[in-house]
Image 1 (cartoon, rainbow, N blue to C red):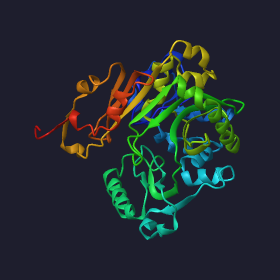
Image 2 (spheres, rainbow, N blue to C red; image 1 turned 90 degrees about the horizontal axis):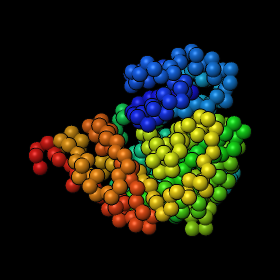
Image 3 (cartoon, rainbow, N blue to C red; image 1 turned 135 degrees about the vertical axis):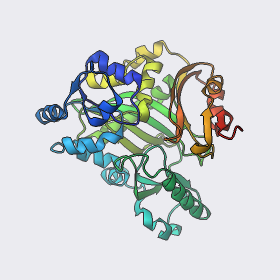
Length: 393
């Protein structure tokens, strides 16, 4: 079954649903977003009956906005509790602490952050909402002298994005402070099959412009990235899956890998792949298979065959987050054509309403593995060169 919710469902995902006649639940939000009556719509009560008869029915959602619907309609199953233990980072740390006994974390109420004695903490550390999304209010703190500035930034971000997502997606009441692991960050699309075995659908290297950068600007995947890390990541996923008895369960997982190859969990995003239909769609552009179909039909990628036709290629998602420092209300337009001209092989462009969301859109590109100048340039850009202000400047 498919649950569609805001903010966006890509044309590729909708076409996948239509072509395969996958059941799509006729929630109020889905019906507002999609007017196509030829889709295989099922009522909410029909969905409840299907899941009651088979609680391991594969369920995919494009958006965590649907979590409240799942909690209400599938509340007799273990699915809501599985979602909750992953979505709340404090509960997730509690779940896995026996596997990572030396990893430091601490849950703190938002109102207690300024009273926290951080002199007792080891630097550097990360502070972020226990229930969060899109790197909102996420900061790295390297020293005591930075703490006050970070707190002020968090206050400003909370004021800027008060009602952007429902509380199930972003809840700023609780924060988590956890140690910063030196290493490389990766995002993983996967699912756990009907016997609980993890199936890898993609591994993306999350690139940063500096050691202070915590943004989501560039994610890249390639043969070299997947081949280097897939075995270790599959073993890591098995550990996570067994702790919560995951079956027919899609996830978008984020980890850090240190210099010794040890994998440290960051978060598990339940019942979806990358937000805004990004990483799930990218597998089609990059590797020629449909991640949504592979999960719902229980298929496994043949990586050897896939890579035979894609040597020395790198595929990336560019998240055009508004890091310009310019308030969206002062922006007249964003020059997408100029942006496209900066890349040798754009694959797809998705525009977003920057007056509502803190992002101009998403760009999928192909580059040659090892030649990353295009990616380096956009990674460090504040995007001001593409912005036209309302005052004409």
